[in-house]
Picture 1 (cartoon, one colour):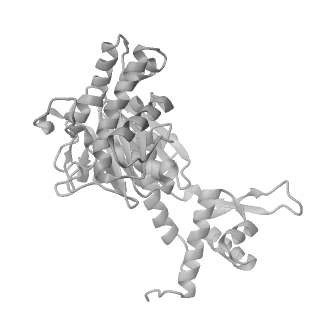
Picture 2 (cartoon, one colour):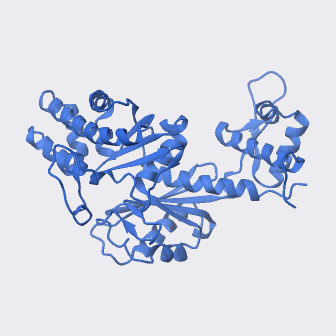
Picture 3 (cartoon, rainbow, N blue to C red):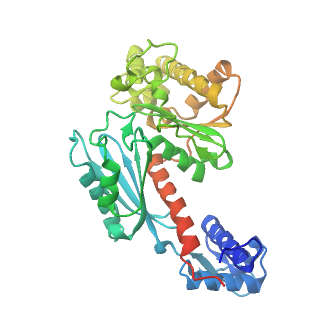
Length: 395
């Protein structure tokens, strides 16, 4: 029979979910504290916890101490009831991790893939997943869901990867079906920069913002766009592929798909950053190292940082004119190498180039934002499924 608003069954389910969310966000809680936070009476909170413990969703976690009166039993989410996997795929490596339902990472694995051929993509993905699960003492079958982040985006109308010609082995027409069959657990594949934005939205600076842009700068330039709390992917998965954005300061690039380049990439991508540093006498092996060196070098380093900030602001001004976000998060190794000094320079320059003046912040995710976002994405869906279906029937 369908549940109707206001029935005891629905209210009980709502209370259960509210309690589980509080235990996730605030850690182990006592019956009294949980009752106070949810507004439930002590008897009702006790019944709720007993119900969740019987469903193996929560478990006892020691007792409170250091307070007047007897110690109270604490309860926490049973993280081991479900696990998820996340992968961050680049042309040179696949990084994988496994987390339990609380988000605690319990296994890592990294598979180097330099100079790989177009063959063996599925086997490499499976090896990375099994490596991370194995470190956690789990079989691949124990995973509830896997989320994979790649450059570019999979066209929802064709299922084929676009905007990432530099990623060999990921353009086969039936790759997603082959991956799903080989992994044999629910699978989602998302643009890597979109996943970095999900991480920022769930556990970073964007938690209180429904409209924001994440600008990613490493070898390539990319962006993720969140509107009204939801990722905007576009008709073909290409929203945010701002590397192809024509911009002043660089010749117009034609056949951008074939060349895998565009105006913003030619201004602020990894190779242009290295060239900029060399023009000012700064020698470094990587774009990140070039920006880090500029921070330490008076005169020439100041010129590099000012010019790089200008180039970033030119691209951001075009994005801001269309999207008008509340917040811009700066991420990716090349940009974050510039730290707060670069952020301030970009903020000042953008104020001169755009009418809207969104807040600019450096990413709050210090370690592999793409992998963190993949885990967060998988966890969000898994928590909904487990929290809504793992318990006993409510009568």
